[in-house]
Amino acid sequence: MSEDNKDLGDKAEDAFDSAKESAKDLGEKANEKFEDAKEATKDFADDAKETAKEFSESAKEAFSGVGGENKKLLAGILGIVLGSLGIHKFILGYNKEGIIMLVVTVVLGFFTCGIGASLMGLLGLIEGIIYLTKSDEEFYNTYQVGQKPWF
Image (cartoon, rainbow, N blue to C red):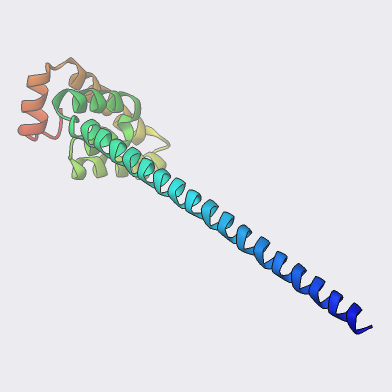
């Protein structure tokens, strides 16, 4: 019986060594996969940074180009479409005038059943048409350099 126990012990030891060897191999494979994943993640992060940088540069180009003509077109269209709210005034940097138009539209429009809002809408429509019919240079000199808030 002691020989059977010895054989059984040897077999157990061999199985244990085999399990240790397999675990070591699996650990090495897992480490390789981890390194691959780590490298792929780094590549993805670099690509994402590059994409964000490109987007940032494009956005800067787009928003820095909001000069004379772009503000003219934007202010004119907003004056026609949303003139009663004074959005076109905010675009041109006339915050006080924009707030006046917004308050008159909301408050006076409420108390006069929309007459105040209609007047501000008409005013916005007229200003939008005036903005769009001026030349780029004339618009720039009048509304952006000269800071003429009304008409």
